[in-house]
Image 1: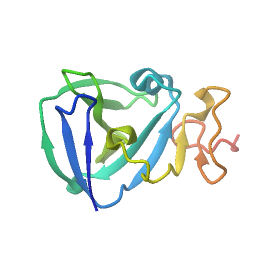
Image 2: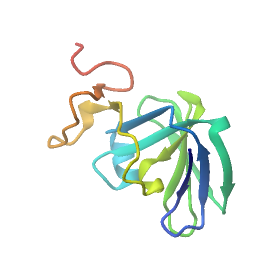
Image 3: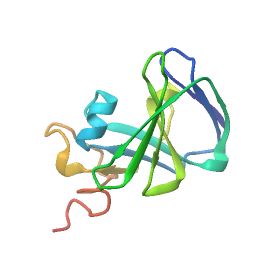
Length: 140
């Protein structure tokens, strides 16, 4: 299956093939700020699944909540983040689920940084909830 993800104005896009390796929600405050929402919903793709890229982009690099490097690639015209790369997952490219504008997109399997999530956010029972990026929420 081929999919196209694009920024708000359509200037920057990525094409992918197949299904995402992972779909996850991140509740860290940095992702809340980057997405402008309660959490960031991201699909992760292996680099060989990226089949095309068009448009100009700007990269912003920062330290993640876990201490690792995070690179955010966004459109210089509309500011939409179109991809991310985590030092923690160097072989995967993250693409915000909303960039696909597809109501049939697969649901998340994991939610990270749940210790920082907004109190009213609830995820379905089948979603694995993590305190940070590795410890399950029910672990002490």
